[in-house]
Length: 336
Ligand code: ADP
Ligand code: MG
Image (cartoon, rainbow, N blue to C red; front, top):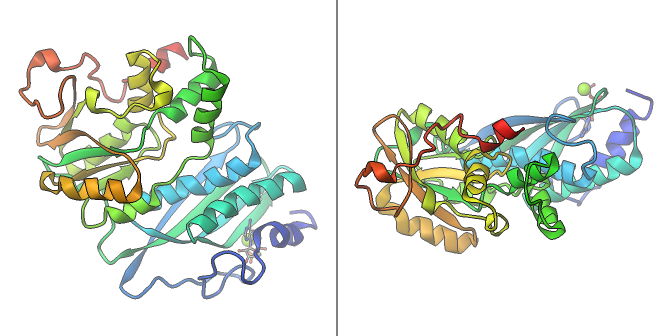
């Protein structure tokens, strides 16, 4: 890259001694960083890349972009029940814009500090704006939460209120009638641009959840990964889905589409044995984060959507929702 490459890296991404988490054995500035998980722990590693025009709009506030680039990676650690340790940053920049870099670094490092996750290295090159983050965390040996552990009879849960990011996306696309109030638009836009990775929840679910995944591509699609890897099926009760206050005045079709098919929320879906509900509720209290039981895992493959009460499993076909095509269940696809 240009002559200023090292100055740029040092100025915006290296922290002065004593600032930010410092857990690496060898941090920034050598050929490799060196880190050590605590004794008895294993490393959990994940990478996610954000490309301008594909994963974010060019108009996004760079501080929010910095937050999101790390958040989507921390979300993967959360889904595995890992504690964040460190990350690397592969930054491809069309030009050196100091104001942009300062804001980007601010958003990125603020979230990193919040999770005690140290930036230990990276790569900086010229090209179309692309942000690649690789994150490393630790989990107790053989204690990572995986997609493959769901068992028939397990409860199915979701954290928070998924769907807001999709509502924001549809507002940007202009498909909502009526449109959103300025206040609601700002709120859901914030949800889309600065998602909160459920890191504490993931760690709280260690030893409790039988499987977990973060919702990046949509609740039904991501649940599909759990079902496939666990070789099970599931029933979801639509009336048990948590509805964001920002979705309350929308029609039911839009609500369900945003919640079930919307992506980019980074909530966790997880399963637990049904005799451990009290523990999930205790975790909910402890974290101050709503955890909603939305269905159950079943031996019969596939996904079934129901209406009515959650524990009213009489299999009455009249309760079976018409919308029963999980991957293709997307109200907006036709409208786009
Ligand atoms: P090398 O040529 O040995 O790969 P580089 O010149 O790419 O090293 O990088 C020099 C140092 O700066 C390395 O320690 C690298 O990890 C770090 N670094 C490069 N880009 C970034 C970045 N965007 N954020 C943080 N550290 C970076
Ligand atoms: Mg390099």
